[in-house]
Image 1: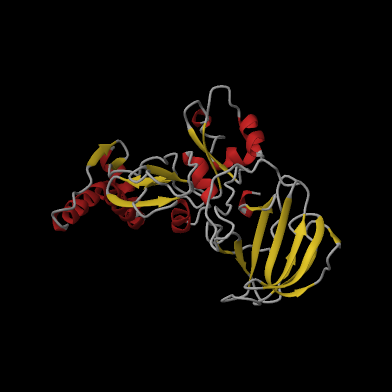
Image 2 (image 1 turned 135 degrees about the vertical axis):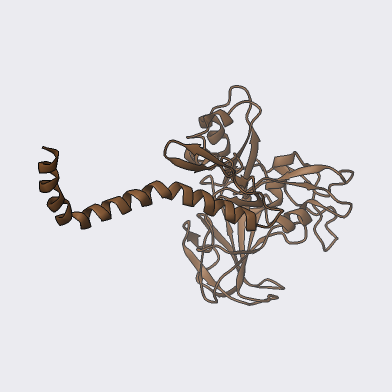
Length: 343
């Protein structure tokens, strides 16, 4: 029987020997693959620079698992750090809160210029009442990530109450602080950032009317803008110089001839040429506010005329003393200069 089986099986094996050889070769390759990977990694580790450690290899049921250090999870500041490299990356929508130590020659505005954050935002974040920062050398202060309020959550606070206090959309607080995914960070004692917050502003007034320069003195501007917030005179907005003690306005650069809009409804009280400021327009609004627009190339309104919020009142120019086309955007509250960015 065995001889009979061999006589019938041998011709069949001969007919299918090519398929059999291929199947055996594939099986051998699959079985040898883990061993070849292990030897390859060992050789790479041997030729690697001595100061770089090779990753550990741990046997698993399906082969070998690379156990090299992984990146740490995202921290609340948006910084991702890896255990094997000193580099960090920060999410585009989140900026870090910087700690800065006040120097002997610092004042509030010099720090504002350094970090390109308004003096009002820095003052609010750190409870600063004296813009000269006298006697505060060596103090570490927080620099907000932008134009907004750094706020420490208190007992009884809710996102709705904080958004109402600062006159912002609750979604802005939720989005920036990632509270949808980390609600535990809105708890008493936690620091949150409120972008676009409506904060108290420092009023800059002259210490002596006979002095040419303007000296900063702290005061609180309690009167709100008529519609809660003023409109930008230019869109898109590019701020080339911020408000500070010796520059009592905000400069906004734009192409020559760009339209300038009224920051809010009001009555035009002046149009014409002034020294340094060139061609200008001033508009009186409600609640003691008056806005001014300088270095214009043309004026499209007249004194006594009523204007609406956003109405074009003139165009960007280079009249007066200027190094390029821009609008010098000025705001006064009851005759005292205030920071337009606070509104």
